[in-house]
Structure formats: C-alpha cells, structure tokens
View 1: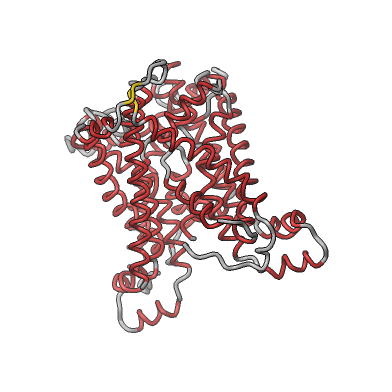
View 2 (view 1 turned 135 degrees about the horizontal axis):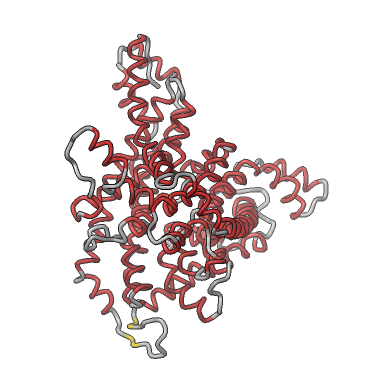
Length: 293
Length: 262
C-alpha cells in the first residue's frame, strides 16, 4: 500500500468527512465480527432463550470435522486450478487481442460478458449444460463419443465442473487486467526483443510476463480472497454435494448456521475463514514487497 | 503483442482465438436454446404472464440505487478526507477499513440474521442495502482515496484563496475532478449489488420484495422444474445486463479493473 503524501491541507479537520463513512462500515462489519466471535463460544440455535457457553469447543469440533477439512481442501484445489488456468487464458487473450486480429471487439465482449452476469442467473444454465439433457451431450452423441455427461452427480468430477464454471466466469477479469497492463508496456522494448531475434513466445515469456507482474500479484490476491469467499457457484449448482464433494467454507457456514441452526458452530468456522482471508491477503502483500527489494 | 508477418500465421492466430473463445459462448448458446425448448418462444410469454418479472426488476433497481447512493456519498467524502485532510489517527482508521476488504459476506449472515430479527428488519430493503453497501465501501473508499491523492493541492489552494469553504472546495473542485473514478465506483457497485444473491436470499422472504437473482428459484417453485421456463427467465434477466454492458463497454471494463490497478 503506498503511503499517503502529506497534503498542504492537513490542517483542515477531516473528522466530519471520514467519521460518517467509518461509523457506517465499522458499525456493520466490526459489529458482525465481534458478534461472530461471541457466537462462536456458544451452543445456540438462534431462537432459544437459553444460550450455553461452551468455550472453545466449537473450534475443536471443527478440527475433527472431516467436512470442514474437505471444505479447506476444496478451497485450496479450487484456488490453484482456477488461478493458473484463468490467468493463463486471460493473459493469452490479452496478448492476442493486442495483436491485429479481426473481430477483436466481438471476442472481447464474449470473454467479458460472463463476468457481469450473476452466477445466480447462470446456475440453471450450467446445471442443464452439464447434464445428459444439455447440448454438450448432444455434441458428444453426434460425434458418437459414447460419453455420458453426468459429471455433476459424481463426487470425483463435480468440483472440476465448478472450477470450469468459475474460470468461465472470471477469465474476463484476468483478461481485462492483463490487457490494461500490456498497454503500458513500452513498444520499443518489444521491437528490440524482436530485432534481437526473439520469437513471439520468447518475447511473451521474458518481456511481457515480467512486465505484468503487478497484475499477476493483484490477481493472486483477488483469487485467494475470492476462493475463500466462494459461495454462489457451489451453492446454486451442486449445493455442496454430492456427499460434500463440492463443499466450501461459505456453503458449510450457511448449511450449519442457517439451515441447521448451529449458529455457534457456523460462527467458529466463520472466524477461521476470516483469519485465513486476512492471512492470505498479508501473505500475498508480503511476497510482493519482498520481490520489489 | 505478437509480431506476425506471414499471411499463414495471421490465419493461424485467428483460428486459435476462435477456438479459445468458443467455450465462452457455449453456456450462452445453451441458455438461449434451453429457453426455447418445448413450446418455443411461448416460454417467454408464460414467464412474462406470471407478472413477477417486472416486480423483481423493480426491487433490484431499488436496492442497487440505494447501495449506489450510499457508496457514492461515503466513498467521495471519506476518500477526500483520507487523501487531503487532517485527522488524529487517520492511518489507523484507514487500516481498519482496509482489513474489512477481506471480509467474506457469509460471516455477516449469523450476526445480521439475529440482529435483524430483533429489530424487525426482515423483509425490508434496508436489510439488504445496508450490508451490501458496507461490504462494498472498504474497496471504493480505497479507490477514491488513491485517486484523490493524485489531485494537485494547488487546485484546491486556488479555491481556498478565493475564500471557498471546505465544502465548496469539495463540491466545486474535488467532485468534478473525480468523475472518472466515480464512474468506475458506480459501475462496480451496480454490478455487485445487482448480482447479489446471498443477502437477498436470506433477508427478503416475501416474493414481492425479492430480486432478479432469485427469479430462477421462484420459477423452480412455480413451474416445478420446467427447465425451459427457468432458462427463459434467466435470459430475461441477462439481457438488460448485456445491453447495459454493450452500451457502456468502456465504463464497465474500467470499473471492473479499477480495483486491481492501485
């Protein structure tokens, strides 16, 4: 984070300008965080007048809960695959569309439209697309491939389908960021590289990619926080199933807290989630700063 | 980025681009084809005749407008304060807001669930507007502050010498100059509030209060798993978003990318 330059107007009192916004944000967010901390030490269903204080036992319960660990594992797998594939594709699209190609705007729109459509709107589409009634099945049948599209129902493949959906949804984001970063690259540097006899891929790897490093770091940050926040896609497409195969921390918190009224347990997992998100953000920030030195 | 001379390579690149883009079109094709399955375009008529689509759109509009208004006012004023004015412990306040950036919205569920119940705020737009705005603000305040820091003090000083109050300095100098970042903030907030699913799902239980993201679920109940109608509803929801994007491509792309370019 860059330090704020001292302004000559620092004598004017900023309190009336900052305080309302701060009170609003802190009032909702920090209130919720402290409330969650408190809830996490209770055994409570949210309605019962009796709240039982149980100390840290909700936390120890999480540590021995295989679904909790499954959700963590899914989050890690999901982050690694979506981060690599989505940013690779976004980078390639940006490089191609910075070259002179035909129908560039059309391609750009097709890649970007998924990022603005709500996952909630697209979920029924994906449920159909990855079912035997969808057009993928029609295509496979027409080619006589003998493949049955039932991947969402199988524990081994469901998570990968959700990752494909996430990549479909967020490539536009990676693309637009890399596209903006590539506009900043000095044209002469590219010319020089080509004159030195470096091929297109060589130039892409040793000139373009390093120059987009800031973007890659930003995308890593967005990716980690995004993976931890994941809710809409698994909840709407597989509701975390089959047999928790696509459970994420968000969907598990919802399942425990809202569906099953284990508010204390849900709150304990929420606290873990918050700590992981903050650690992730600090880690990426550190890595970035370490490299700059 | 690529340097391509030969005609053949140009064609190859064009084909590669096409092959890479096709998978992005498939879900949209599926959405459309699925929506005209069975009785064809009559699916749209059936969905429209239920009369709920305009209501859901109106609700989404109200919520988005409310969130945008709150986010705009608070990011502009706080961004100005953080960038240009003096306050004891300003950096601490700023960091406290930044930490909130990482907050997953699902953490808000239990606390707000219990609190809104006590305050009888269930089924009010406020129950959705307030938390969405609070989740959006840490980010937009950061954007506004970074942008405001780049505005030269001289511009404000000139106004100051002319005897302008702090408020008119903000009104006549800062606001006009921050239009680019304001448009990014508005678009970003619009997309996030329009697409919000979890908070409306939880806090807006009555059908006449629900938002467009809950339409598929409504039709799942209404047409008992008649996929074609659910998809027709999805198309109706997607079209205004796609049109808005096509009309304001530059704004959308800048809004979505504004965050990562700090």
